[in-house]
Image (cartoon, rainbow, N blue to C red; front, top):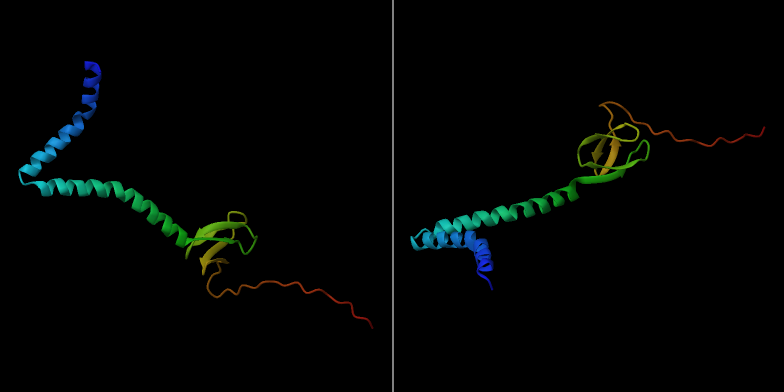
Length: 123
């Protein structure tokens, strides 16, 4: 083991040794609470992104609705209790009870046409 290799390894450890020395000095002066609070803050900063990521995934799981447009049948995704527009036909839709419904102004009656086959009547 050469002296240059030892210096190289020691230079990598220098910041950690300095941090350890400062923590030991603060603890010996009765400021251990400061060290503990700094460690707790660092731990929370490391855990916060993980908790936010999983919380956002859970929120999306409960608030995303995938359904078909009632006008053209195009399947897409929207948020619960929101208004949106079908990307295929442009129809204004709202999400209610987990399904897409046509957005109609108050007082409008929405009618669905049904085709009835005709019969020929003999005389």
